[in-house]
Image (cartoon, rainbow, N blue to C red; front, top):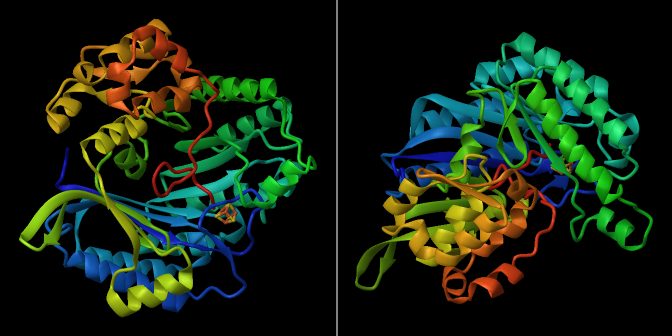
Length: 431
Ligand code: SF4
């Protein structure tokens, strides 16, 4: 594991409107408490910069996620980036991404973000169909997205990502084909398409339960997934993760860091952090552990804690070897290239085949994985059922103990459902 660098995530939880499908830690506000929130972020960054856990390591990516980071003025983003550069060791070629809602972008704002140091913009296009955008409760139109892309190019951005949603109520396969064509015409470097999921606690969930919201038939959704793959591949994009496509060399460095199960520091309301070599104090001295923690979710509580104490951790856990092995597969198998067998051996001092002696054979027989001398990856078919396949890696002891037939019966496959916890974690842009 590379312990000399990490990804830095900053969560900006404010939006102008709460989309009815969204279960991210985001809040609709008419007045953004920008000054106070920036002070809280800086207080937390200052606290972490002095911790031995992060000192001496290089920041290889900075990611402003949300919520809608583009509700902030460029001078706030500039202040935060300047503070990071003066407090942490930052890689010369650092990737600095900012998620933006097309409805909040102007040419001036984009130009100022560029001057502040942002070098990658992730625009939440979601669709170009006015009815689909309306159903999703988006505040922008297709022309906002097109104008934002043009303004970003004029401002000098050479690394643009666009998000797209499919499987939206009322959306047909031909509607989605038009969305794909229009996204390709805009020539972004990166595309993150994801299938709509109905999340508990959202207005969509209520409407879905009561029968007022009807999702497209599963066959249509599968057809949309197939269209997605063939259109984007035909346009020169490479699929490098379950729901991410990039032109060669334009993969998101920040998100690859998560999928490679490397360290990351998250600051802001509800942000998650992971440190594989974290120092903790014990009665008999200090000890190094793998630790993961999450900040308070509510912005007011977060700001209060961060400003008063520099940190705002709501809860934390230490991870044991079994947790880490599962994380390794849970995250790494999302990548099309899969996980490196050498990396596994270096981290866990064991061969993958020793940990999952029967499971690998069963998954190979079922055509769900591909195994080479270097890598273990999901096969084409396995990618369709990624969640169901990956969850079998959760319990190495069980998979080693169960007889082959029983294990095979246990593996039931369901179509993939993208994880939506970005910026943080497995992302999916959301602005
Ligand atoms: S989807 Fe994006 S813009 Fe909509 S509420 Fe969620 S975070 Fe805000």
